[in-house]
Length: 382
Image 1 (cartoon, helix red, strand yellow):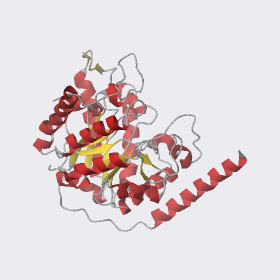
Image 2 (cartoon, one colour; image 1 turned 90 degrees about the vertical axis):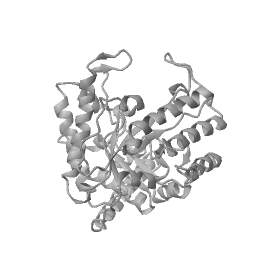
Image 3 (tube, helix red, strand yellow; image 1 turned 30 degrees about the vertical axis):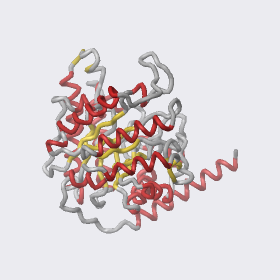
Image 4 (tube, one colour; image 1 turned 60 degrees about the vertical axis):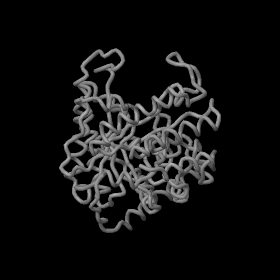
């Protein structure tokens, strides 16, 4: 046990030293290209998430080092070779979810070691010629406070402080780095319940619209390349139907450089459930005519409401559980979602966690056939 603690301490120290070196080597601001956000999203190709890593959180995780959080949900320590492996597989964009408040002081100052470590991984991804999407992810539920009148102001203070620090830290980065306003938490059932349609729908939407507008304002006024940085705006709970509702408003952006993000885990009985639950029976198969029609309906909805109006779309997460399904069913679902999004000029970003699809220890895909079928979608007409 003592040896394990020693090795962990040495690893953490090495990471901090490496991060400090990386930060010291930061060069002058890169030039931002004169391209639209639609053109940028088209360049991205297919994406993958570095899931269950920097967004790992929990009171049982010791806050004494960045490494404790990075590995808290099962990931090995991320290496440059691991990041290069995503590029070698053929992916064009890496989404990096981060729970910044894991190591944050009471005045909402992000721990410099935490920021430096994430910055190092971002640098590795950019050096591998990957686009990067960096966000504020779910981290302990503090976003719930936006739905409470007595906590909303303090939540905005925390949110604005976080993004003010992040925009300062990354202001000289080029346009292959995109900021994402938040994850899935932009919707509050205690204010409005979509299923019963009870409550104040307009108020719940207006809070999210306010968050997204403040996000754009913070980035644009923060200087450097952030004045023209391409931004990703989280939809209402990143749900397609709710994001296509007229109550959801894209923020005003003087640069007109915003895309919208939604997630796709539909039907949840297939994509999420591994066992039967009180709200649904776990599906082991997908691909019926009605399944495909449902997929096309939602993808057409995003195309009509956003892409056709000049607003780019990134499917920031899509994926499926694997425990109760055959490899054939998994491939069919994932490749179908990927194709439906990609051929409608949207960028699909696969949700992946440690050794789910990508083997983080051998730096390769666990199912080569799945990878080949996914990458073949890049050859389709858009």
